[in-house]
Amino acid sequence: MGSPLPYKTPRSLPAFTVESGSFKDGQALPPAQTSARLGVSGGKDESPGLAWSGAPEETKGYAVTVFDPDARLGYWHWAVVGIPATAASLPAGAGTADGWLLPAGAFQLKNDGGTADYLGAAPPRGSGQHRYVAAVHALDVADLGLKAGTPSSALGPLLDRHTLARATITGVFERH
Image (cartoon, rainbow, N blue to C red):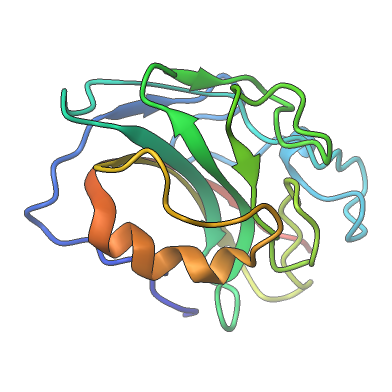
């Protein structure tokens, strides 16, 4: 069902650790991470809190993404780039349009809903359970050369070239 992740996941790519205070890996997303804007009752469009550790020492920056590979063509819910190598977390709610909780220098790309913020889970009714893969990408560059408001779809090929290691956590959600 759905699409593959929008970036390669070679077996040789090292992993590191990411945790979320918002949801547990493999468990249902809470209402805060679902979408009021897309009609989910109780949804809040609040980006999840993420904390990571164990990235390679040579990491020069991070990107954080949330992607639904089970949407018909795949769906970017959030993408943040320009996160400095000194960062080890993003607080819940950092994905607001003004991005005021993001680390200095970090900015959001446009999600597939056309806004530069976090857009919560909202799969079509009857489409079954969807996976929402939150990924922290440890990068070999501090700047991917993107501008604020660039569509998230431009990010995949850059991640293929610049990711040293990746940490993922997946939440699920289904609308009945």
